[in-house]
Length: 106
Image 1 (tube, rainbow, N blue to C red):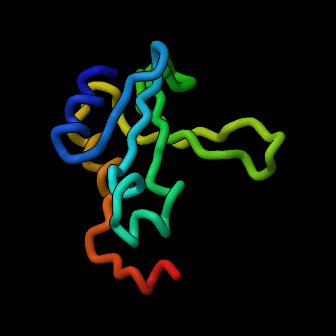
Image 2: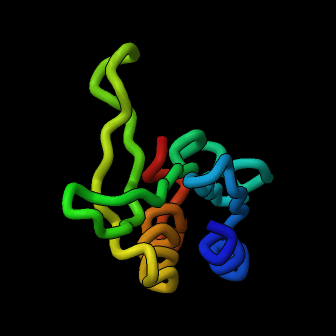
């Protein structure tokens, strides 16, 4: 968990280890004066967890909200837990704002 959090922080995201299996990543633009960041908040935050799949392989998983407020979270495989660099690349690609114009978020 700490390796992923450090790798994300090195790439410009705020990242925090939560409990024993979760990393919470945030694009800092949501907290500043960036108009795109403010418009997309809270969408620039993402939880990922590290846990085994049904075959016992340790993976990173995206954590998505369920379809309704009362529904459980949904999990989507992100990649092998050992490949922290690839996981960080994918998380950053989802949370970054490169190429997004403020008017596109209105």
